[in-house]
Amino acid sequence: MALSLSPLRGRWTEASPRERSLIRSAAALVGLALVWWLLVAPPLRTLSQGDTAQASLEVQWQKMQSLRAQALALQAAPKLSRDEALRALDAAVRQEFGAAAQLSVLGDSATVTLRNAPASALATWLPLARVNARALPSEVRLTRANTLLPGQAVWSGTLVMSLPPA
Image 1: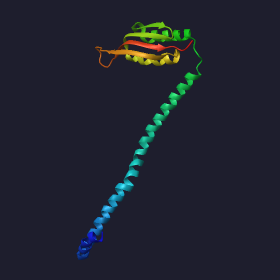
Image 2: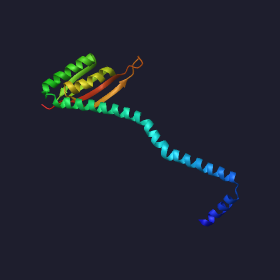
Image 3: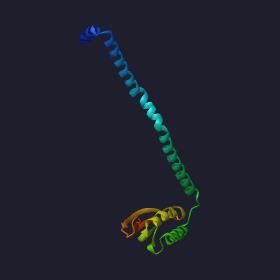
Image 4: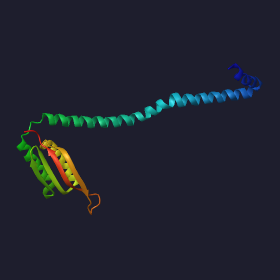
């Protein structure tokens, strides 16, 4: 190590005071830049992004609390008989789809057959079926049909809904 530094020491002693001062200044500047990039900038970046991350986490927390409240409400809701669940499911199908859907019941499941049902009606109907009839989709086979109106999606196919136990 001493042998590798000896040429540098010789060069240092030969340098004029002005050159030494410039070398010291350059070394100090490089040292300050390293301290900034390695020790100061990362925490400052974290602090500046902290507010955005906190807002995002707060939104996620609120959504989780909403979902928790929904789950607790569903657990606390009184049990439905099979007939009540079927009536509620039938009413929801007629209300949201009208003639675009047909309901058939076999055992503990109900099959809803859709023919060109609007996507907005399907999005409204699924939570209604879950909350009012306690019916959950167990099998879904839907295809999106093309319409002449841009931005308006319609669906055709079947949804098999599991009914609550009798």
